[in-house]
Length: 332
Image (cartoon, rainbow, N blue to C red; front, side, top):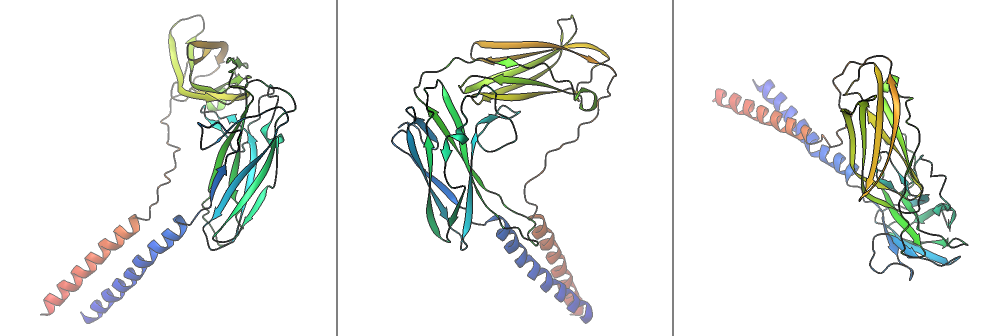
């Protein structure tokens, strides 16, 4: 009984050490101090706007954009910055950071080509460093707006032992205009992309906003019908769509959960902003039937599971303490 008691005591001490040490590891991974970015606004800034640049510029006007980069950590860091034109992703969201999506061919100006300055900034430990970049407005008058953004990111050193990296990026939109006169919206469509229909049961409708205007809070709907019939068999809708100026969106229509029999069908896509609508209709054919499959979730749970381990350890400690108490009681 004495041997068992010592064994329980050893396990208890070991678990206590692990229990106390585990949260320290977790906090070190998740509570690292991150850098911060604070923009300073020039006189061209709209007085009613904060959080991003909304600049009314003149032809060929030169403007300094200044940012305060703060490093609260105990180590020197390097902060990179990337200028990109605004784009529209497949979910109808405006993206201000660098992505692989091509800009609309109608775009007359690219914000990245209007700004020059350092691409990297060294910020000493526990210090603040100013970054100054230089914007030069187009050498000709332009209608509408030029939209893009600057993304700040910490340059991480590669480590053989580091398996988890917390990447923090700051995207600050930059909008240029010469006046607040809006340019009316207009949309165009490519032919319906059926290249992924056979293997992924996916149709893609490419939608273009060739106008230098932001389209806000619109709706996109695609209605699937049997050819020459009015009944809607399936409908794909996105009710909260925004378009960046001079951008293109790939609207996906998935038939995975709505398999169609062999035959010819039409896909009618309607884009609506306010009272205005634009639409296109394309024909497509299903050559062989698909069976409906139970869709598996592709959502990754990003919540930490660290709380599970302390719970398990706490239960084990309670069990061991109970056994020790029981053995001591029996001995008496």
